[in-house]
Image (cartoon, rainbow, N blue to C red; front, side, top):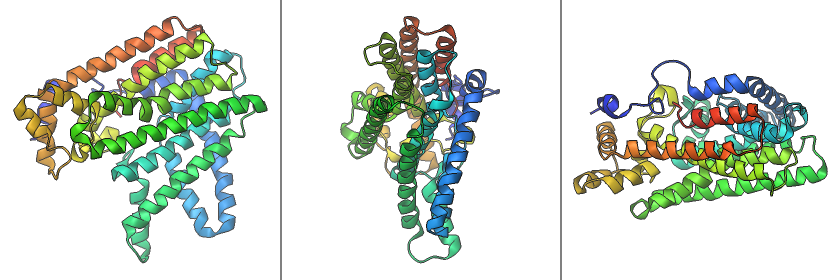
Length: 384
């Protein structure tokens, strides 16, 4: 049984399967922050060129290693985190504020994101990311092609860990180039450090969940979504941007950002849960059904187990065991048959509504409000 067998019945929204046209996030980014994304790309490209030259002086092999890291930083992506940070900054600083001083800090969030992705792919043993081999797979292939000694896969994982580490150091270095006062930079770093701590916390809970899937709960799955995704994708980037603009923690706008960011960030992860099972691999760049193969206790799987009949639950308990493609396809149908897809879609809609309510009372100009409204909807009704 194939995924297409259920597509006509339950995959009814653009969140899961595209019906033609541009991806919603891409369209919103083009409408509001095309110039920002270009500026971030240019900032990263210039910064990384200098860093690679510096490492090449140590050893030619280091230059190649650094170039591999650069390629994964610049290998596509929607630049969502700098975008949310930009609007967090813009909502405080206003339309006439100069972007140049804060651009290095905004761009650094992409280096943090690459760090998280590369390490996450090693932990999940993922083969592809954005339609291309993950870092550890690409490096393992280079090892094989060069005819080096040792286990190529072990080498690839070791080097990928170092690539992630390097990106984390690069992020710190790029943030330090922001044109802020010492006090402003210190406050911004406090927000950034909290974002990093919460990302690690969420990642640990994600790993732990796979080893305790039988006893995991929907509450813990949502906690993973809150710290692994919501924090460093939406909430903390918004607050990071507000810090860049000099906002204090007790300002009403910061409270609105916190409420909005948590709601959109959780909805973003819930959308990822759906895409992880029902997404089109050509669009997502990752195989469909990976979460079922690994037995990852996502909110989608937890809801499915809550709603399942005893017979369905027995089938769902096979998630994470050795399964072939037909087994995975069968489980995708079982998840849909429980009604979990519709319930998770409702959870997404409820969180978007919560986010828009937070914006309704936020003291920001209409352009920023409009941009954040569009991003809340687009980031949670996307195809990849």
